Figure 1 (cartoon, rainbow, N blue to C red):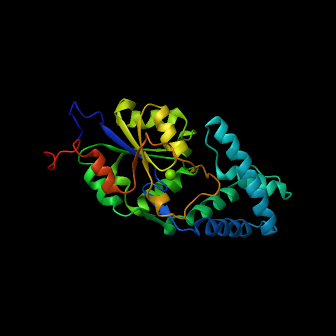
Figure 2 (figure 1 turned 45 degrees about the vertical axis):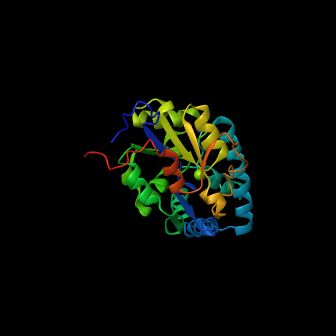
Figure 3 (figure 1 turned 180 degrees about the vertical axis):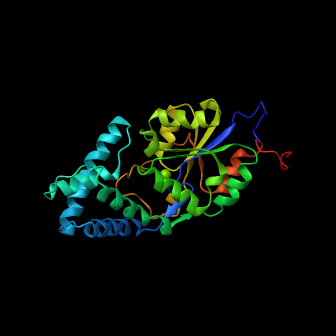
Length: 264
Ligand SMILES: [Mg+2]
């Protein structure tokens, strides 16, 4: 049920995914790289793993820096392609062997991702009062959608925006506009909850949404860090609303949520 209370500016709540609603085991990325290399070998590529990893890292850093400057999303297939070509191949990023390797890479995520404690109950309760949305920076959108299905939270979202599908990533205003359009709400009526001071907090704020900094993952030294998109540094400042648990989010919204369940 949408909030019609004129004193309450919020009409919808958006969430970031990684380190906000879900965290992943520390070993996830190593496992993902292992699966990626194994898949390429299975497709017939023969290379030194150390050399491949070095080229992959260099290529990833280059593409990501470009992405950061433009706001346009990149994709792992470009990094894999560049790394293989530096090892003497002449491949296109759309080579089906690269697509298989991308799938193998992300297959390591599904068994290693878990919800932040209380997330399902929080979404269940909150969706009775506000439409909910998800806005994730994730290069390979099918994997992001599979993660949502794996942890069982996709049904709570009225709208899901994945950077890999949009072509742009947070903090670019286009993705926040897409979230607002998914809600059919003006941006100033949207509360956005995320862990990253730059992409989530500054991004939401610059686009006119009200950001809430969720610090559960940081406070619990949640191990997952993409290692590549390591933007989560710094402090967004004392003026930003901050919660470290879902109880704290409800406390923040207290007074804006009806005391009893809404009418059906
Ligand atoms: Mg995040």
